[in-house]
Length: 125
Image (cartoon, rainbow, N blue to C red; front, top):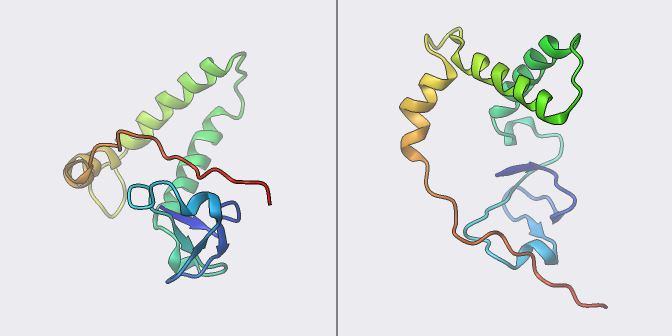
């Protein structure tokens, strides 16, 4: 996971030698890896950020004139729109996000760790 200068976990956001704070340094560093992106360095960030922006704008544009009276109702509407967005053909790729995921990414996925991430206990200084 690449974080954009995550202050809560890092004391020094160096690309090659990030310094984790005491709580994140312990626990399970091999299973849950955090890679720091340097401040003001967009090339360090993942290519997924523009896709997240596209999805956010596309979904919000369709929901902006609707009223929802429960969180479950809003989540159901978002779920439908995410399915539609993933099924749309992308320009330049000739296939949808769902098709590319099935072809490329699904084969490389591994199971989640059995144990959740455990933060280190802090002692009073």
